[in-house]
Image: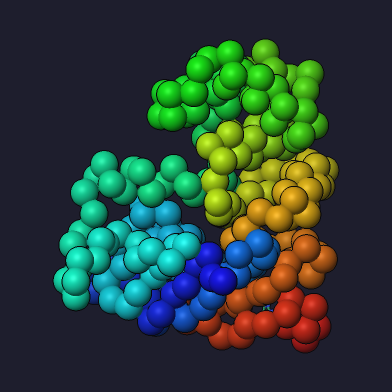
Length: 239
Ligand code: ADP
Ligand code: ADP
């Protein structure tokens, strides 16, 4: 079944149409890679999936539910802010910049949302955070502050922080683009492990090696439309 389904999704900023009718489907459990030149609308599309932008036309579904609306009979009602917040809990997002809270340790960063948003007991949240740190290879960095970590380590904490909310879908927006080249591999390794665990992932990336090895599907976007799609190993043979 589809975790994400887009049917003729349009998005404009003022007069500028950024998404010009996107149709695609992300199957549950797959790694779906989104590539294309800068400005083609990839990030905007991710933001639509995560309720950070509203689509202007077309339909976008996450896990079978229309994003941003509640359906009653044949009428659609826009979700209220608190309803949107509930939906967003199920979606993890990792950005190009790590966006960790600078005044909190790695462990505290990971615990924050489960404790504050999900009311998970502190001790339980801390145990889980320690497990997640181990999973991303940073068991020894629990008490480090973001400024004491490399970019790659910060990004792995950011992934652990997203996983702490038990998302059903993970969105990655160029997660390695801001990293020094020698740190990219560690982050991609964590993403590969996550893929092997069965997580549904939509990944905007310039890492063609990752797309080819780990991706199940690939879409090439340009100018707000899908130009090519298919098996990454086939799509990426003729650049
Ligand atoms: P970059 O951002 O690396 O300068 P682009 O944004 O133009 O390059 O393209 C991103 C990646 O998509 C490139 O690595 C390129 O090899 C690949 N690519 C470009 N055109 C196509 C195409 N028609 N089909 C598949 N892949 C493509
Ligand atoms: P990509 O992720 O493929 O680089 P984006 O989705 O970031 O592309 O951007 C697509 C286009 O939308 C760009 O031309 C960008 O300038 C424009 N855009 C993105 N966000 C906004 C915004 N908040 N207001 C106006 N234009 C925007």
